[in-house]
Image (tube, rainbow, N blue to C red; front, side):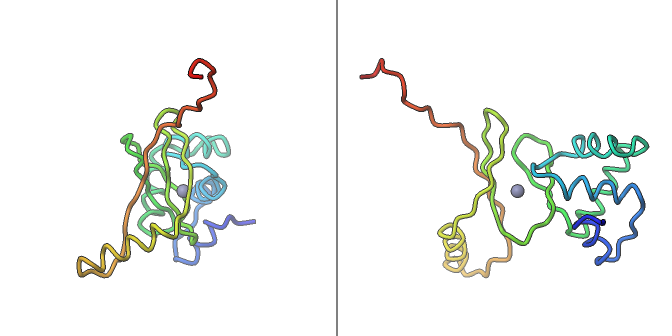
Length: 143
Ligand SMILES: [Zn+2]
């Protein structure tokens, strides 16, 4: 069965080779936000002939076709996720590198109104939050 991403690629008129199919499956099945090296690791576990250069090329192609999104989590490594219809943002735990996805209606309204107040129609935005876990105050030494 073709992956969701593969179907989207076909719909966009991309020629799908076996290797592109493997890479699209890896990206479709990812529940995290892998970088190119990680996608290569997973893809080459399925087909060891897939080179890192092929992964780079294919992901650039996918990005240009807007079937995947490139994300910047501030550590200099591009991360990727399948383009999704459900709009969401990311909070990056800078201690562990864990990425938490969230949505917030109030913030969505706020950015629209900021643009409007400045005399613009909003056509895009980027927002990542960076944080460290709040320390739980469970120790008794403070009482
Ligand atoms: Zn995400």
